[in-house]
Amino acid sequence: MIYNQKLLLQSLSCFFSVMVMSSGGVATRLTHSDVFVFQPRCRYLNMSPKNVVFKKICKDKSVGVYMGKRDFVDRVDSVEPVDGVVLIDPEALQGRKVFVTLSCTFRYGRDDMDVMGIAFRRELYMSTRQVYPPLQDRDKGVHTKTQARLLRKLGDNAFPFFFEFPDNLPCSVAMQPAQHDVGKQCAVEFEIKAFSAESQDAKVRKRSTVKLMIRKVQFAPESEGVAPSVETTRDFVMSDKPLHVKASLDKEIYYHGEVIKVHVSVTNSSSKNIKNIIVSVDQVAMVVLYSNDSYVKAVAIEEFGDSVPAGATLQKTYALLPLLVNNRERRGIALDGKLKHEDTNLASSSIVKEGVLKEVMGIMVSYKVTVKLIVGG
Image 1: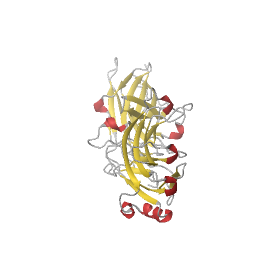
Image 2: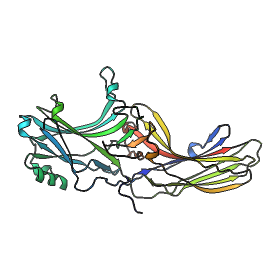
Image 3: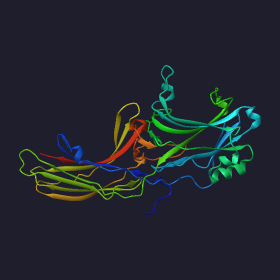
Image 4: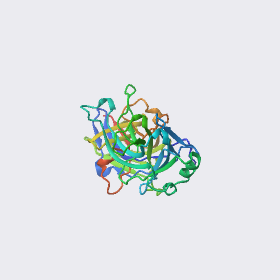
């Protein structure tokens, strides 16, 4: 299969369920044992062109950050380390030290919503390293070819930094705000911050601080699982025979921009008439850190209008294409972490490593495919 390099190739994993609804709106859901659940997988493709360097310099010119990339891949069993270079101006520093911090923050409100000095944010992780004066030989701090290339180009006043992610951190994700909302909204964010100060715990001046947002993105194993399928039978009063419905997918993994084909088989042995069939892909976003809030949004839905009279059968494949472009105006859609001036996509499914508490994941994202049959009298 050939993928367009402009696409971020991450997966949509799905719960799979079937619903039978009367024309009056009463629904019968499958029990939990009837719901097919499979683990998400995805493949991440670095979108940053080769030899592109991201840089940002603080206002007083004392510290600048240079990085070869801003997207770091979580492969479930390991995570790409964060590396870069800090360029300092000894004259502007005036004897101050230089530190670099990697932080992961869960934000659940705008900065201007702070109440009584309590911020609507929580630090999930923070690690700080002193880079100047260096605590070790500069060459020993070089871990990547990008760092080595930057050090050669920037000269003797450049110093490397290197961080490794712990195993229990979530990936970058953000809840899409409404059009009228301003400021930062509910999100899991990662940030590199470089600053100069007399000590690590001293008060830091904004003019001597530079911040660069980064992303931690999901990658999943290559093994292919069994294509999901589910079936259910519905009995009706005054009908001797039941309605049987089976639904299945072609495969277990779908990438962003890929059509999801849902195969539906209906055997209507009942005396009821099926008036319509509705198929949807629903995104389920759970804010698990501070509450059990759950947001279910249909990111693709089609009302096909197919009917199945009493005693008839139907076998048909329905195609759905979940895309962010069709959901941009909708508040509460979960997105992959967004960097400034860069586009993103629907959030990929969350993978929770064994032994990691779900509560520290901030926002958990999953997807389900739902088939609804509207039954008339």
